[in-house]
Image (cartoon, rainbow, N blue to C red; front, side):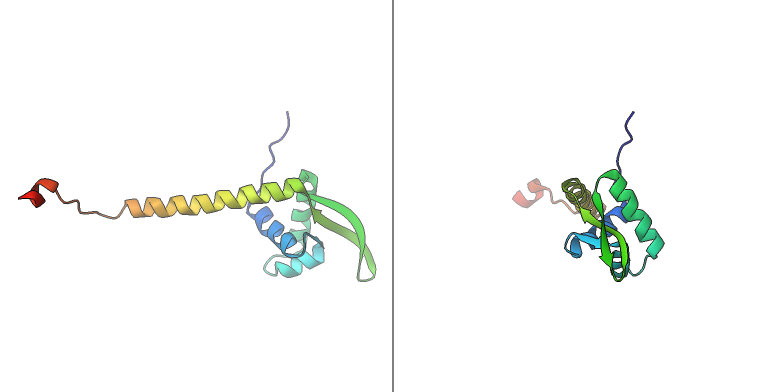
Length: 114
């Protein structure tokens, strides 16, 4: 049985940073963009996203070291777009539900006719 792939909040935040970095980057670059998260957290998220097929991995030179560079895949772009679209739809739905709680006065048309 194949495991269902998930695209959680960490993936959305991390993928947004990768997209903002021209669709590719080293863990350190992405961690610097996401300054509120630790390097280890970002590195683990990037590795998990690569394993899921959302990113590709290739070796590249960063500073004086040979490190893994991650690049977004078509599947990653599609998953990100779906996840962010769902998030927007959820927010819009929540606003509609909040509006439904407001009391609305409905006038009776028969009273207006008199």
